[in-house]
Image (tube, rainbow, N blue to C red; front, top):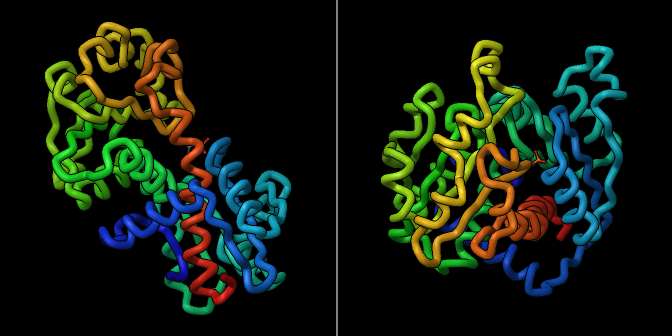
Length: 302
Ligand code: CP
């Protein structure tokens, strides 16, 4: 496929293929490019994991990576996203990974029949985070080997979270039972089609996966932000030591990170034996290799 912008475009077979290819890369599969391939990572929102793990994936695939800093680019002179991407294509870039604060920014690019450069969405506002979703699915698959009937709780800032939106859609598609919990003010009715809302403490002991969400401080409205009490949140919706002790045997903790330690999760649980938070990051590199490989194969570069 030419691009990867939303998990809505991905059927079950597609997702499983990408997970399997990511697992093959993790097991040592080597990529072979048929011609030089160039990538650029256009990040208009802050990132540590997604940007560096895409860079790592590009390097492991043998791609050459161009530097780009939004803050010193001509975007600051008013250049549009389309013109920025078209410029990258014109100078010979094959794949652009883009993170942007605007939901569905990618529509203006992938609906443009002129563009031949591959577009990979590194996160759009509160919309989608497909590479995070696939690395989460890889992590769950490594643990349980199947999604059917698996009980997954997505807990926290549901309305602002692109992770919640992409993971709920994909987990439901793969046959998992999806549950949601969190503050009423961050309830998101668009998620009802994928799962069931419930009480955190009632759901927790029955869950196989507890997928914590980051409190999206940068997306809270001023009123929301001023009213936010981190300690109160931790007591009501955080994975405290007391709650973690009530988790089912074999259940795992996930969080896309960055983690607000002491808010979504007690700091000592971040590296607990049943936490997969850093394994998710490791898997991110292999998942992104699989995603990029798919685009490169479409372009005849692999
Ligand atoms: N999980 C994630 O997207 O992290 P970054 O914002 O650091 O890329």
